[in-house]
Length: 273
Image (cartoon, rainbow, N blue to C red; front, side):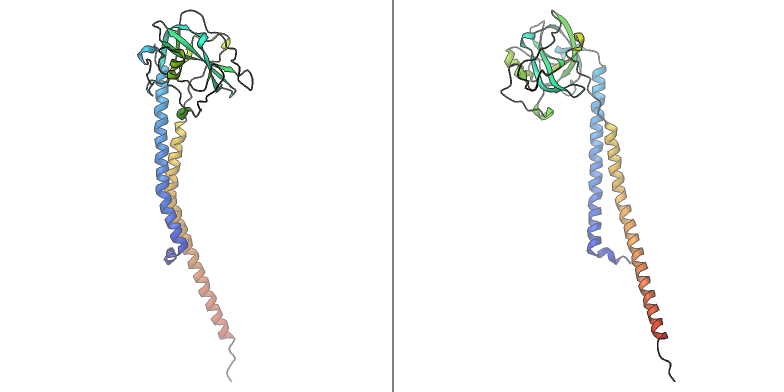
């Protein structure tokens, strides 16, 4: 009855089904791993944003690489802005996907160390982006700044190339070590996205909080892949049953046709006198 399973067509179909099952299971495991990573990140971001600010010196120092656990932590610092040495970071977008700059201003602490503060987004003055843009001034004098601690930017993490030959006081990536060489000063590792005090007139535009990743979507994808994996043997069995039924019906039809043909031959024989 099932001898057709040894045909080339059915051998290929069976092997394909056997290959699909573990592949789909592995894809489901990968999606579940993505779900766990995104869930952990969302919990980390929520916890970091909800925590009270701590002095920035507790988490970073010159040459320090900001860790994953320190990222997004709310920190505070006391000092004054150094607008003479501020730079702009090219090819940055705001919440409306408009291209412009991030304003990176050195913040000189009371102990002489320097903290890089990303004060927010400003629009580009023109398509060439060669001239240094006009930047709203920060508050003067000594003040306390609060913000989210961030690690140095890299091409690998951001996808942005660190181009050379840029116009004066323009950079592509925020790199505390590079800024330390430019400023010839002890610069704390990483940088801070300013959250307080709020800029006057909302310029530069404050950078919004990090978005929550859709971990539930990865969970749904994992379940979907595993349902597909379970459906493969069910589908294979249904196809086998259908093929067996079709072959049995075809054989019965041939047998019936042969029987009808034999009866017709008997009826057509001449009578013997």
